[in-house]
Structures are given as C-alpha cells and as structure tokens.
Amino acid sequence: MNKIEHIGIAVMNLDESSKIYEKLFGVSAYKEEEVASEGVKTAFFSCSPNKIELLEATNPESPIAKFISKKGEGIHHIAFEVDDILSEIERLKKEGFIVLNEIPKNGADNKLVAFLHPKSTNGVLIELCQEIR
Image 1 (cartoon, rainbow, N blue to C red):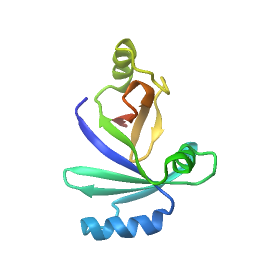
Image 2 (tube, one colour):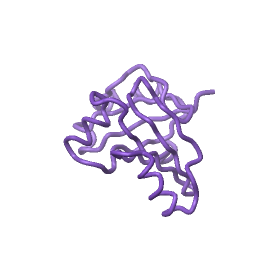
Image 3 (cartoon, rainbow, N blue to C red):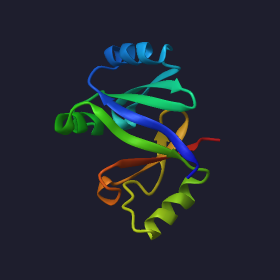
C-alpha cells in the first residue's frame, strides 16, 4: 500500500455537508459524481495532500444508507492507494483478511476498488484503490 488515498465520510445530505467542508477547507469540491452500482452520490475535496470523500445514499438499500441508519453520519472508510489491486487482494487474503469483493469494481474518482471487511481490520472498513489506467 502506498498511502492513504482518501477518507470516506457518510452524510445524510451531500449539498448541506459540502457547504460545511467548503468552509472548512476554503475550496469547493473538485469532483462530484454518482456511483449507481453502490447507490451513492459523492463529492471529493482536496485538503492537500489528502482527500475527503463525502458519500450520500441514493437509495435506502445502499451500504451508506445502512451505515447511517446503524451508526449515524461519520467516518465510513479509509481508502489506501495500491499499484496492483489484484495482487494486493491476493496478498491480503493470504494474510487472513476478509475481502468483501475479490473482483475489483469501478468506484468513484476513476478508481478500481475492493473492500476489506471490518471484522478483520479492528472495526474499520478498508478500501483498496487503484487508478484506472
């Protein structure tokens, strides 16, 4: 793993939350997009050299909606940048981590993504991210 790619924060209302982070960082989101397969709308903020991803559910069955109903708004996941997501998935499986999706899927911000189950990472949802080339 190279570095923390971003921190994902689950929010009830993307527009209202974006205004808070615009004031906090002094900049607007550099990218907003919907990831239909995950049932989310996202907004990315650069807080050099780090990034924050705000996530709003687009349907009540999405992982973000379920997270908020159980835990409320807040940190949802920490994403790490990797060079080769397939080999990293295999390495982590061999180390005993529970991989939620062994075949990476398209995520936000031009990334392939895969997640590690919080049961195997001390309660933290870990996302692996590889830039789509």
